[in-house]
Amino acid sequence: MTVAQETATASTNRAELARKLGIEPEQISTRSLQWGNLLRDGVIVQLSIGRVRGRRKLEKEDLGLQGLTDEEYDRFFAEHISLGVKKLLPSDILIEGDTIERAIRKNLEKASFRSLWGYFVPVTAWRKWVDSHEKLKQRYYDLLAKELATYQDMVDEVRASYLVAANAAWRRAEEVIRSQGVSYDEFVQNFVARIAGQIPSEAEIEESFYVREAYFRIPLPSEIAEEAARLEATRQQTERDQMRDAMETEMMQRMMSQKESALDGFLTDVMKQLRQLAYDTSIELLESIKKNEGRVVAPSFKSLKSLIEQVKDLNFYGDDDLQGKIDQLNDLVSLPREVRSNSEIQTVLQDMATITRQFLVSAGVELRSARNVGISDVPDASEVETAIRRQTRQLSLEATDDDMLPAVTRRSRVIND
Image (cartoon, rainbow, N blue to C red; front, side, top):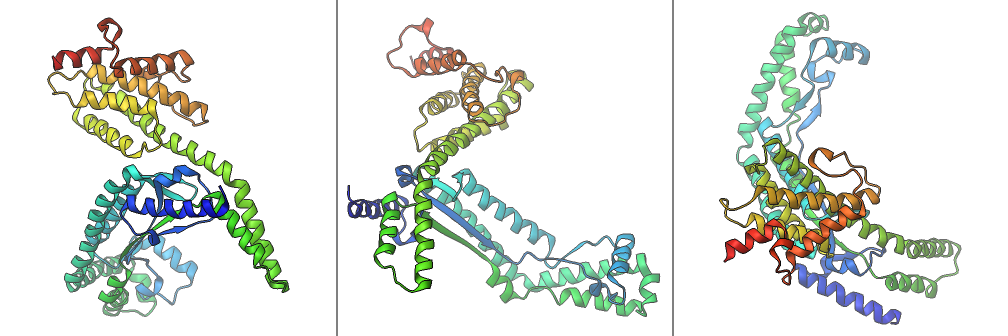
């Protein structure tokens, strides 16, 4: 395929990816790095979240003690004042803002893979992420509407809280404050006024509020080569242009030399992240089952269902061994509670933990011991093969010998008869 043909193909793939994601092609910009064809089934998402944080360090001027040296103020502050960072907005507003922002970022993390270039959201997780992201984003802007609608009440609340703080500070350090020639009334009035004067205005609050998304795609190697060829064809003879072109050409060459390792690293990281998610959750569930004497309690059952959904969303690259175990767990949790076997769930979780641990250990990931729930520190080939074979036999439609099938299959067949 020629450079022109590959470039045309890249443009088509970009349009196809945009179609799958339900956004305009222009929203997906291009970066000069290569991840391989796998990236055609996903997009890099970057988030920027802003708002007035409403927290500032309490300075000596706020206490009317600007006459003290920095050393004297630090000693005074340590001995008498415990106000720390001043809050310019009510605590409940600050906490709610922090909570929603964490939820927005966590939502992206849950639907993506961390990579060298940002969060990679596969097509399989895209729609669910967009829907939940928009709901969280609306909550964020609802908080802005709440702040604007109750702005004067917030200002009054902050002033009242610092009036109390000013009196507390006076009681703790009256002698030091009076030594600066400051009376009680002056101290309290200046203390509250200085802090109130730093409360952001309604316009500042509104302007600072935003949630912005940026989407990126990584081009094919030929796009990098084409850019290098373009630089060569348009090279000017001025000294500055020659220096610039030399720098850009070298940059392109470095990118091309790194593309294979970048692709390998990306795929390895994707597999490690998804398998570690499955492993960590499996161990937590197995420990819970052991602690609760073989029972899968409600919180664990919820975590199990969440794991099933998350792997379903993120397994865009086709991890058959992992997906087989997830399908098996999905079959189990779909059974009525009265016939669902906790021991069968435990067995599947142990198999999945064995398979994923063997991969993670071989990939150099440090894991805590899970011998307490029946998982070898370094599962050998026979253990992994047994786990995979048990999974394969259960999912096979051709397996008919009940004695050869795992308990979960026999149970399912009895229920379905």
